[in-house]
Image 1: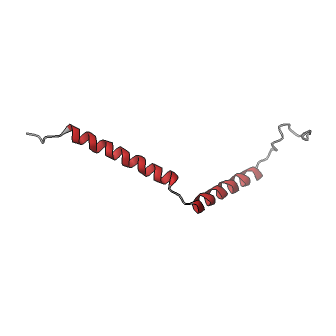
Image 2: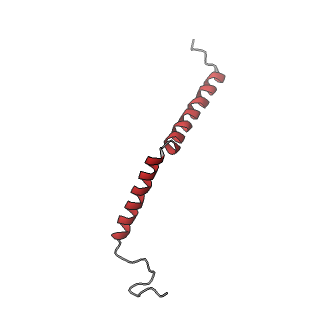
Image 3: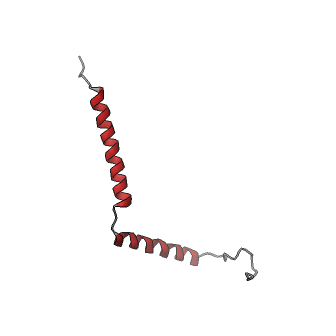
Length: 69
């Protein structure tokens, strides 16, 4: 004969595992120090500036014509 499985207990264990995974995701997203957040922001800005510097076309919207003020 097979083992007895208590469905209520299994449901509670599954809910607890879901809570733990959500908590781990929240810790990863929000659990950074101010210094680490600032460093990540600066790195993102530096990457964007580097990418913008490597563009072959200008962002003025008109091709080859200077932007009018």
